[in-house]
Amino acid sequence: MVETIKYEVVHEIGKVEVRSYPKIIVAKVDDSPDAFNLLYRFITGENRQRAKVKMTSPVVSQKIEMTSPVLSETGAMAFVMPKEYTIETTPEPLNNQVKIAEFPARLIAALCFSGGWSEAHFEKETQDLLKTISEAKIKTKGNVFTMLYNPPFIPGFLRRNEVAVEIEQTS
Image (cartoon, rainbow, N blue to C red):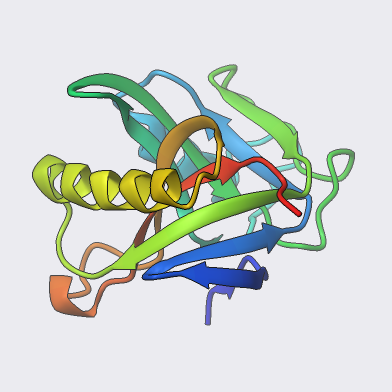
């Protein structure tokens, strides 16, 4: 069983969950079409300690950025490190494209959906997420990203996918 980030649902707005996430450590690659493979090699031992790191979910990706109505490629991807790792104890990458980063605890608005991956599907779900947040008068911080929970061999109708964005704290 793959470890999944633990979060708390603070409240729901229609199909959108507002979640509180703890601080997390990630291995990330920015701006590379080979991001997944670089990260996979890192967790399977391509690091200074030759340590194998357990796969976790979700895989976080910022493949496309909404700049309404234009989409532009950003190509960032991150693997969340298992909860026992800290910024100090995460293995040191050998490839300089793989960076270790710490994301502070934060509030995220997320919209869950199933199905296969496509730019059109992502765009539709992103529009639904942003419309719901806007109507609730919630301000976003940063860009929309995806969280993918299943390996590619899982049929689309069984996959758990999410579009999400960091939001400002509200009272």
